[in-house]
Image (cartoon, chains in turn blue, green):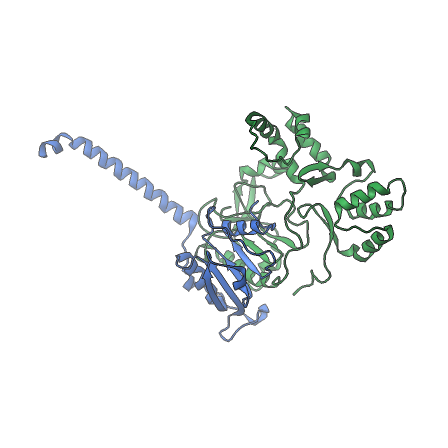
Length: 158
Length: 292
């Protein structure tokens, strides 16, 4: 074993140098991207915009908009938690339901439904909502656009 | 679509109600894909944009095609999305009836301050359209797609000829008899559709309305066309063609010219023409456009 290590010492050292070099380049690029282009994520707990009386928004007892919001998403994900926390800071009533089981009828009793999957997945299950459902809704990202396509809306993907 | 929106007008109320959206502008190099679309070669080298989110990615969200987006009064463009696949003008945030597409992909934590305020404003805005479904569905392709598709039609036609596969039953939007008139001359095909853009309609495939053209009309989508077609019903010589064209371009079927005229007089302030809704003159129902 010792002999083997001695014989291959130069090779191992070269490999170590290569590995260190690769890691330094990789982390360097990542650091640059974060600081110059991406910016820091802001936790939803820290994002609160305050309504004022001049805005013409009907406010509830806690000073938030009294619109009733239904969020249909992948509820166990950080993304969904972020959305819900953000919404809860700004609306009196925010309830959730699963994206995969969402049917338009659940929007009854809410003012606006936000339909969200992961924002980007082309292969996300495509919701087939009833064309006669006229509840106000926001469809988010690529899965939202495909949902619109299913309804033959101009907001569809193609 | 990536993180940004084109810096078009901020006059719409979604940029000010309830929260004032104050975006930070920056300049980017014009995306190369824009050049491949009609009028794309006229765009400047640099474009002013504003960020909606901060993912650092140039892809991820979705934009809807701009062609025909505003040809019915139930839809509106709110934000043009900077994108890497479609045309300049593709819709990053837009509304059709009671549904608002927020084409951006990031959750609030990754939105910019301006993006988060805009998202909240969009929630308040779309609430006003609760119960107001769309007037039309997208059942046809807008006429500008002829110019978009023309440069690649010959290649598509040749591929289908080569395949000779009986299972290939896809009907091309541009008819083969038109494509084959311009073999080896893609610019000629583009020019053909540019020259006839006001006469295009879709009957499964794109057609140029030679009947309308022969009657000396300038367009198939102007109100003056509808009005004159109705008046031609009184003209014995042209009445059959006028009736046929009214059937093509409306969903009405009145037996008498007077009924056509009455329909027009009663609704002329609310009539619109839509390509994507089926190349028809349609009437906005009374009260539909009243603000909530």
